[in-house]
Image (cartoon, rainbow, N blue to C red; front, side, top):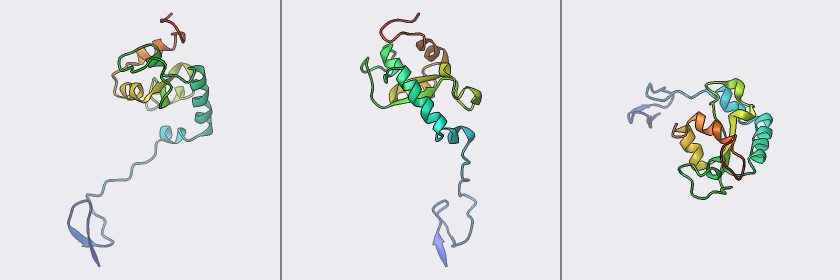
Length: 128
């Protein structure tokens, strides 16, 4: 029995392995880490440390819509896991960001230096 291939558009036998089929991506050590209880506990610890607010919004960085932003938060690795996996649980490498600032950080629009400097900013003031 034959079927239309969704990868190349041709008709093949049902058990034919199309060479256009993309390879399955393997889950990296970093990807697996995000599902561990260790990460979930550390992520909660960092969000508590940052008062459940986006640290970049609190510092009024570009992209800020409101200063006290507690919406759509996640914990960001300043130095990515793929660059230095050993920093995965280091408090000085973790920062709470809203979706907008997290996407900016992932895209390189916010540098590691800028984000690290924010960790030295007290909740209501300017950088020390």
